Image 1 (cartoon, rainbow, N blue to C red):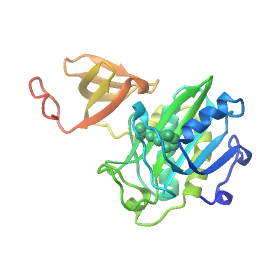
Image 2: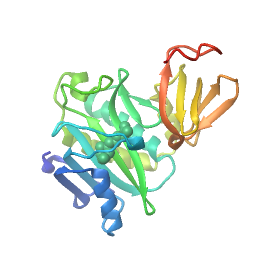
Image 3: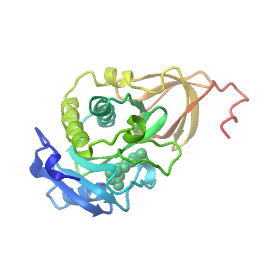
Image 4: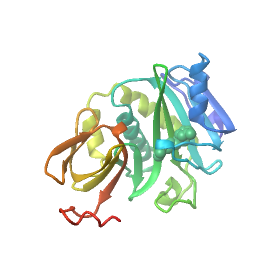
Length: 252
Ligand code: BTN
């Protein structure tokens, strides 16, 4: 990454940016910085390569050296952080790359149904660490259901410009009031049936809306209305058709 081409502003001033060619995980580095009293809101840790990248629910996050945009940043813990981050990624992809991305609630960003970005939010002491892994210049991806900015637009993109733009958009979304209205505009679940994997098992139903706390609200197969907060959903799958009683084996 060409450090000189990344711009800092507002909360994210350049003196709080740390760039690494290679490190285990930007997320872990941010945690260490908070633990040793250095990390505070506005710190951004960026890596060209990560060899122990983590995704949600302890999944491995792999990325390609110099092609992905991999970073973690520290913020105050405020409401709707995962929605603010997801919205900021979609707005960045639209403004910077002309891509219409969708939010696959709660933390995935997809383009044409394929994942282009993952978000991991953790806390350390009283601060939040937000990790973002964006596929930018990959021309080949190991996962079938993944894509990159370059694959979607056909042209290479600047990771530096995308990072600079994201940080400035995120900062403006930190204080934006109508976050959930904006998030709903980009949702991929509208008019869909979903299957939500929670710690307590799988729940299926018809997507109704997102609530003001960022929770997904569905009408379950038994007809009750249920809500799940982002942290309660391990995975969410879209279903192609309503699952009527007795037909709920079709996903296998
Ligand atoms: C997911 O989709 O499960 C979330 C993936 C988050 C990956 C990013 S890459 C930067 C930061 N460092 C990590 O180890 N993970 C996050």
